Length: 310
Image 1 (cartoon, rainbow, N blue to C red):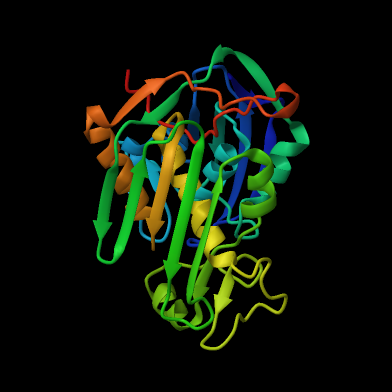
Image 2: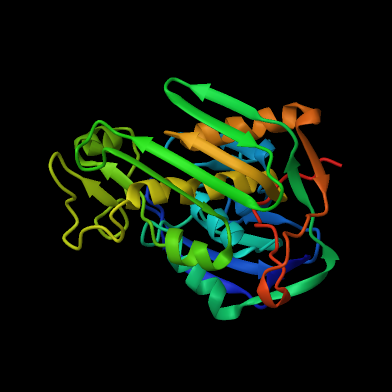
């Protein structure tokens, strides 16, 4: 139940899916209690800014999650890296990024996971704490609904989506967040978009780095990508991937149950705001262990981070 960090630094490079600019990311090990912090470099006049990866730093949720500070420094599309860190149980990292947007890589979190797995994790001296959900919290936006519910241990996510597209339709998926399951079931699920929206997004200065190498392109009757889907329900799995990353902005691991119908980045930000707005809805505690399995194995609670509210 101790905190973790990386055993060594990790370097990842690519282009941003929306602005199409190259970005170099260096993940540095960090001390216990540091949490996840972004070091935004290459700002005008050679400036650098530290931005905490916490819900109060969210600046935009249109198509991706953007965090920033009062100086105007921002980092966009952080959700895939945050998802990888939460999915693998990484508590403390300094994320150095030299551009305004994280690289999209292959559109999933798999390459972030692979890079982290190459160096591995180390256990630190301080105990891990969690945000324990004490009572139901719910937010709605149009037909979309997101809830956080109490749970005895760990973090479970159940997501359902419904699109007016015969390629996607209605899909549901749920699982308990554990590193081995995250690697196998979620990490490879790619972001997706509709071909009919491409021209509109380009005119708005968005999706400039999108391609069939990093996005599932959904046509009227079929997926355009020649290799097809990685999972038959890859769309809802990616929604889970995004939710894990967005909820990692809580600042600690979450002990609770996330249930959502047609969620998005905005709803995920709203549910964290609603949770932390009600002091009776949560507590910052040391996590409870689940009952022992055969051979005495103890299951740890599943990480997904949050703001230091003490």
